[in-house]
Image (cartoon, rainbow, N blue to C red):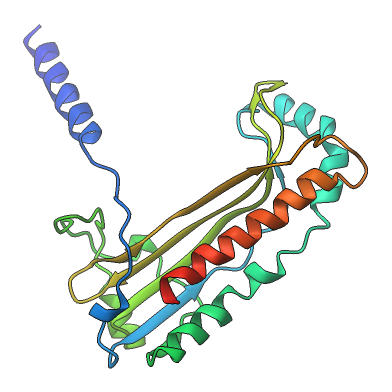
Length: 228
């Protein structure tokens, strides 16, 4: 009984400790606080394959059924071209250089597991020490755009769709000041845009097609805005 009581206490402490961790709040970039002599490392991930996804269709049979039911939509979505998003690296680097900063292009991120753990500073949830980027690349700030999903999502509950498809662009978007391991910018991008009017219009699905390119345009604007 005593052992059970101790175990329960530990579990409660663990759960409440995890639950008490606050989410990272947005951080607006103020370029005026970043000296021009600082070097900025820029990493932009490749655009993932543009396709459909069906969150909530959790089992293999559910996913198979969702994929089959939306096969015409998927065929159209896979013709989409995110050409403006693909220019993100070049456009952001050009903006920073126009502001007078030296920019270092970073082709791949250091695996998180190789970075030492640290206690987050006030106002930050960063629990890894990113100083290795200064050592390896000679930069003072690390700017990351890490795309997760570009395409169309449709929510499911097992076999059943629970809404219309939506165009989606999601990405990590942040800058870390390597001197103090805190965010200079934190603005994750999670865009979902529904079709105007009827979406289910095969074979070209004009409504969802327009929604995709609107979502892309909105994402590009968000990525460029901090450096205007």
